[in-house]
Amino acid sequence: MSGASFHRGESRGDFETPSDLLCAVEGRWGPLEMDLAATAETAKAPNFITLEQDSLLPLTIWPRDAVCWLNPPFGHIEPWAAKCARQCERLESEGRIILLVPASVGANWYRDHVHGKARVYFLNGRIKFVGAVDWYPRDCLLAVYGEKPGYEVWSWR
Image 1 (cartoon, rainbow, N blue to C red):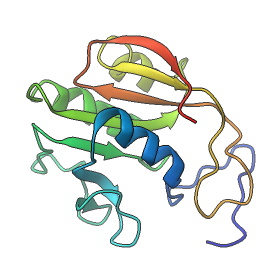
Image 2 (image 1 turned 90 degrees about the vertical axis):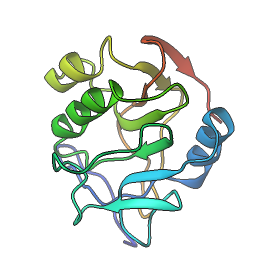
Image 3 (image 1 turned 60 degrees about the vertical axis):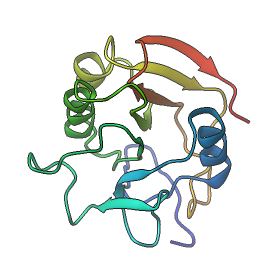
Image 4 (image 1 turned 180 degrees about the vertical axis):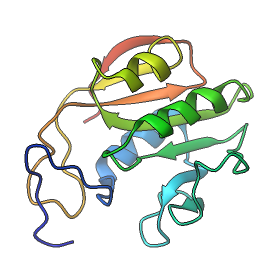
């Protein structure tokens, strides 16, 4: 993906999460056990579900007691956030779903599936995804399902 960059109004689903963000995430929530939208080359956890296997299918059950990572395609976030909210009801005490998305707090998917259902960590600082030439042009957040809903700014660097 060399030479890739971001342009206004463009959304790519194949940008890989940078290792510095993942190290900070694992430092806070522990090792990631499942990547819910990966390829064999980009998986961030020892267990993963590929986009071809389709993590969104109703029969695809996400782990209940694991720390799960989800960096979904940003072009269509709503079904991913909806499944996070549904799966959150099944989580056991140590289970977490960590969703990385743009901080689109005015979007319907955010209102319906994140607000009041997850703890939201607004990321202090922009992200440079692996394979991108430029920094991602929008603020991002982590919605952590399995934690008490609320909000905070996280200085993850």
